[in-house]
Image: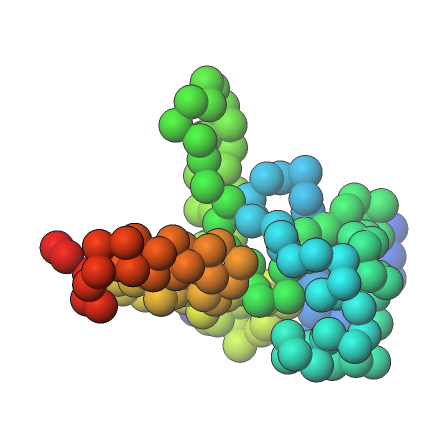
Amino acid sequence: KSRLEVEFYNEAGSGLGPTLEFYTLLSAEFLRRDLGMWRESELPAVALTEDADENLGIMEDRPGPRAGELPVNKRSKKLVMCPLGLFPKPISAGQDGNTVTTALLDNFRLLGQAAAKAIQDSRLLDIPLSRPFYKAALYGPGSLERSDLKDIDPVVFKTLSQIEHAILDAQGSSSPKV
């Protein structure tokens, strides 16, 4: 097996330093908002303030954007921000264009190949994937359950739970009918 070793054009040096920088830059590229790969946080701006960060499990002294701002990579591309981890953005059935779907699939295929190479070389990709994404990647999309929605979008999960309870109350039943 051969390890990936990176050397940047017009820069002196190769080896560990540039290779680690390559993985860092690659990670940031996968987080670009304009790629349309990831669901974005639907949390209100208030939830992204320093007071609420503790509730989301985010360090208060984290570097990066202030509430309401999106992080930016070195090439001034806006990055996706999702405090609960990244999960693939749904593709609307009404979207016309195989190019969009093909481009997305190509990007996810490249992400998988990059992750495999990083694992093989004992390197890290700085891409904060959500627990449901890992679960679906390891066990297939059929392994996801309704309760996993809490780790993808807690607002939608809460709304669905409220609707379910309202339906059960209207039916006069305490257990869902199948």
